[in-house]
Structures are given as C-alpha cells and as structure tokens.
Image 1 (cartoon, rainbow, N blue to C red):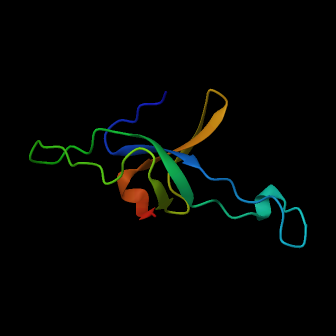
Image 2 (image 1 turned 180 degrees about the vertical axis):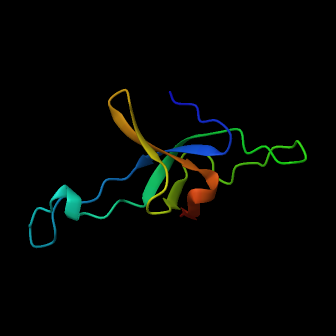
Length: 94
C-alpha cells in the first residue's frame, strides 16, 4: 500500500454520477472534479521549525472535503488515488 510521507494524505476520491437526473450522459471534461474522498493513509506529520512533528488533523477512514484543484493523482494496483497535503483538506464530513 502507499505510505505517504510528512504531512501528506492518500485519498480514495468518490466518483461523481455519470448521468444527470434526465438521463443525459456528461462528457468527462464537462464534469467538475470531485471534492470529497475517504482517507486511506496518513503520513507522520509535518516537521516544525522547533524539531517537533505536527500531528495530522485526519485519520484513516475519515470522509473529507478537499480543495478543488489540490493534490496529485496516482494510479496504484489498478486503483486511482489522490495524494494531498494535510493543509489542502478543508473539513471532515460526518
């Protein structure tokens, strides 16, 4: 499995619906990038100037809301993931 370093977090992005309510299929370039995902793995935390590590604000299995254009998309074992910084995560969704 992917093990993020520092303050990075690995997310499994939730897929958007392929069709509208009326049944129209949207082209992939017409869809907005999803902004919610499930936390798969969390790094150790960011190293602070005083030598201590900042504890990440999320944990595995949290559902989160992240910045629209944040992170790097990666493919691992046939699955698509997004690696973002802890600071790119805006909220935990209950």
